[in-house]
Amino acid sequence: MIQIEQLTKKYDGATVVDHVTFTAHPGRVTGFLGPNGAGKSTVLRMICGLTHPMSGVSTVLGMPFTALPNPGRRVGVLLDASGQHTGRTGRETLMLGALVTGVDRRRVDTILDLVGLTPRDSCRRVRAYSLGMRQRLGLAAALLCDPDVLILDEPVNGLDPSGIHWMRSLLRDFADEGGTVLLSSHLLMEMEVLADDLVVIDRGRLVAQGPKADLLAVPGSMVRSTDDRILLTALARAGLDVSPHDGGLRTSGTPAQVGAIALAAGVVVTELGAARANALEQLYFDVTSRRANERDAA
Amino acid sequence: MSPTGVPFARLTRAELRKQVDTRAGLWLILTIVLITALVMVPVVWLSDPADLTFWTLAQAAVLPQLVLLPVVGIMAATSEWSQRTGMVTFALEPRRGRVILAKLLSAIGLGLLAVVATLVCAAIANLAGMVLRDGAGTWGVDWSLLGASTALQVVVVAQGVAFGLLLLNTPAAIVAFYVLPTAWTTACLLVAPLRGPARWLDTNVAMLPFLEGGAGAGDLARAGTATVVWVVLPLLLGTWRVLRHDVK
Image 1 (cartoon, each protein chain N blue to C red):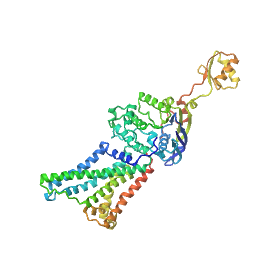
Image 2: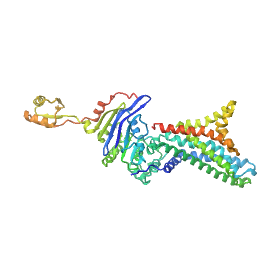
Image 3: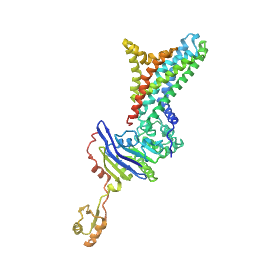
Image 4: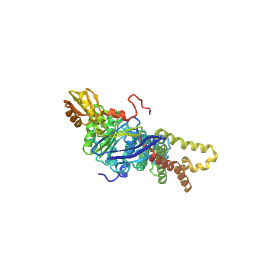
């Protein structure tokens, strides 16, 4: 469990993170979204005690991260895959992690295998790694001690489609076994598939949060019938919002209400169901201030 | 799961390992030992055979080491920032003060290892002197002088760590480390009124008596003052900076 409350950070007078509050629950993948420069990385660094907040608090597993004894054992952190010593081998990078946390060294081989780095890869220096390999190494370091919580900043950056697929199932399994996952990503499609809960920030402020199903849900229903004209009149008379949509009618009523009205009106319904969920992309552009064609000013 | 924190010994071992587990780190140490060994070649070659003893050879290595070992301290402190590994290091041990102390101790330990390696080189050179040039080859050691020069090596490594922490940038720390004290020494030589305080505030001047032997209580006070100004103060300021600094 990760809880943050009213977290605020200013750099040189500019508010980078502005009273952000949210919770990442165990057993769920929490997707953290926002445009470049929205403050995502700053929030994640504040949770991990690497950046000092101006005000507000954050706790991981019920206490401030910095108060966790041997935090590496409970919380796996990957904030920047390029934050690895380029002159060190992948294996040595993990051995150092094992040494500090005190985890069994044999875990290093297990975890290298799990993230798909071959023994030959692991003996090469990080300098020779692609971004995808660095991500795998960073994830290996985060998973080394079999933690309860994962905090990952853009972990799918640089991964190829099979790598993304692999990461998705790995994080899904981790959450299904009761782990807490908080990850940021730019890849909306990926988040739409993977995340259970969503937190969206823009210019340092929280603009949307909640279960993905709720956030993307569209109230109302879609209906098709043999005579939409009569049905439209009947639905409107019943006080529902109704409009033609995609060869049928879109209404503000539930499928049960619409079905009952159609029955009373004697109209044959050919198709009736809850309105299709919005795409995450729709939500993202609705709540964040930047348009698709707008260049990042920061 | 793991209610106890990271034991300090483990943290120090990890920091020590970080200093030698890259080619750059390993070669830095090897180069320092190699250069000090090379310094002994002309000593063996050119000295009067009667002066060719273990102690003369060991003494020849002190000055190059005083110049080179601080780089070990600087690198120990700055590499987390130049390589951006600080995010991992301080996420594994958020009590940054302990990490800094582990870095300081491991750098000093590595410096002492280099001193020992040099003594081994001096022993080999002494044997070579006996065989090649019929040198005196005696093994006598001036223990108090050895103690003083070793203490001095510890101080300069600590000074390297201090400058590294203060600047968090390898080239800047190296330049500052070599230029600032020398600039101060030069200023003191050129400006007469500075010469009095210089005896207290200039490490190069204050530490000389310890390399020459026969240092008294006054010398100790002066060297102590210089150490506070050039080592302890930067170390405290550097630590404060790292504790406050946002790690990115």
